[in-house]
Length: 428
Image (cartoon, rainbow, N blue to C red; front, side):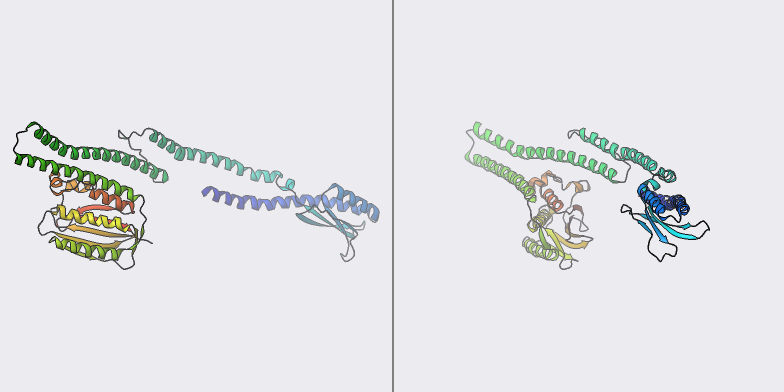
């Protein structure tokens, strides 16, 4: 912008202004030349035949139009030699005088100011020469600027991409820049972090599956081996072992069903078709549904909101209801309180609708609250075996909410239990 502005000022101040000066200079030059023609015509006067021959000769040798008028400009033109090639004209009126200094005729000459008269004029060349030199200088400066500020950082980024190894941490690319290149470096670091986080989650998932399957299988193998080697066991004791084997087998089936359901939900997210849903109606329907369900368990649901009517969200309602289902299920399962109370709240802030589900249960330790949405994470393994669950519920909620363009987080509720808050974007 600075370069364009500077060039505009230069063109307006120097070139356009001085172009008039060049044209004036050219006109003065032509005036002097054409005065010589008028003076020669004066020497030929009153021989009109010689005058016409001379003017015709000038007309044929130069790209000009020549018109000879009477001295009073009221009679017919005495000579008319018009050139059809002239587009940009400059008129010159010159008197043709007799020997006694009386005006006999007026000589009108129409002459173009050609490119050779202006662009090839030495004064014009001296004026225009700094412009291409300046453009070349600016071009070189821009090349150097782009090389060090764009090309080189991108090359550095490409080199970083070539050295990415998902099995070992990558040294973050650092940039002090606040422009698009700096943002690109930050996004690259975030991408690399997500890649390693995904690998950690995959490793943890395999470890969790292995652990959760290995424990009951070890128990089953032990009981089977015991029944196979000790034939003399009492029938009652055998039946107890069979029941334990059956219990552990059902637990394995339950684990597999958890994994299958989670995988199915992840695949369903890729094919959901969001539809406009009224936030207020959804809130009221959820509140009525779970108020009835919790009252059947002798628990209490308290809800309030500040939502207005006709606030629409583009969501898959079935998926969002599944999020609410997971949150209420966790409150009941892990609240561990006889007089459990669940609180639901809804409100808008900016371009998002916020929903909160809290309880007055035992809550979670500070060190675990930020890990609740990690796949297969459980606060306490003993709670998991006692209450069921694989640590996939909140991870599933996180996937659903983020897929809808919102965010979800956990916090310590003012009711002393756990609180979960998630947001969904408003249709604008």
